Image (tube, rainbow over all chains, first blue to last red; front, side, top):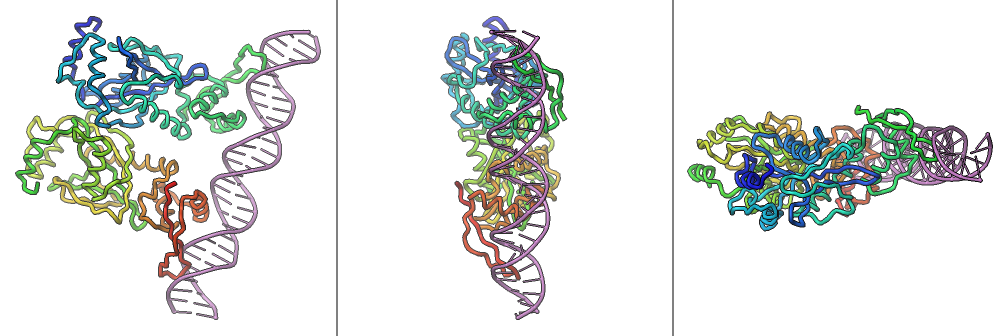
Length: 242
Length: 242
DNA sequence: TATCATTGTATCAAATTGGTACAATAATCA
DNA sequence: TGATTATTGTACCAATTTGATACAATGATA
């Protein structure tokens, strides 16, 4: 599907998809003490969007979300969680769809699949930034990481979807041990604390955080990490599932 | 829509609905220190089900859920919360649909709307038992309250949907002050404690529960409730939103 | 008027959390 | 080589929250 003619045909005769339902993914990574989100930019437009897609008619919902994210990140078996369904009747906009497709040289016929009403199931994905290789889809120029405080205006209700994902993530963070999905296999307690502070948006007291995390019995101490800095070297830890 | 011929026509020429998407409601009430769930039983079958329905093509998702529950309970402005989407490809079963419709004297044609794949959005509803008037839909004989520990085998994945609702409710109970939706306007602390104990499935220490609830500053003390029992009368309280 | 069960509140110990302190240590630099 | 520096791991104590028991007050009953 590299030639435009193929793309055109693909979008005009979409394979068998589940009607009315789409998936949008709030895909988060953590790099240099910053939370990052993966966003697409559509070709020849100023529209930014969450990575998303549709469900094949013979595909489980969860599998569809995994597939969509694998296509954008190259990763399998991603930590994914549903968080909300967005179903306002006017959440999408035909004109925007036409512009996006037009940016790819495709004119949508009035009865096109895309011009129907869709609800969107929101998933948040927590991934190891260092392992992902973002790649755009057929309709987009770029698939890039953005700092959470520099998210552009997104199309449709995607900013709202992001906000809801972040709220849910904050709530879940002290409900389940999900933060580790955003870190590499080994990390220092300080890195873990940075992650928590970034997600929760507040400073935590270092000694208390350390005490809390170690008392959970979910961290395995590996070896010291010589940072090269003029101070005591921190230990590296590994998350043990339990 | 009282005559069978109307019903038949209705189901064969459904009004414009959003394809592929249904709503199922885990509707909870609280009566005599017991949590109750509202279930339907389809005519001339042994199939029990959660109350549910479809989304009109020009209807917001949230409105659809409210409408569906209003039809089953007579209540408006119900406390409703999405909790999960159930989207396994084989979660439904054509044969069961045929049996249910057949129980109402309707033979489904092969291309009937109902025989497509559906995902279902789960909502839980917390309602004031004393205010609801359960009424069955066109396909069901009964719409009744069942004790949570006496839930029959439900059709499709409805037992699983119920379980997930209960898990979510338990988690939410100490996240938000939602329990009050299950009580009448005024109640005693003891009634509130019974409710919490029932949802959480564990006993709580009376004095500590009382201290906790009163310290939240969300209860307004009204007057004493003379129970007629040979003991000190408890105060009635009212929930003040905040 | 004594009895009874339940309520509202007090009390105290145990556990958790918030915040500070300090010795240990890896690199740097005089 | 030894002092300097920033950060780490942990100890410590006060403040707060939670768990569990105790007890006086009270509304009905007999």
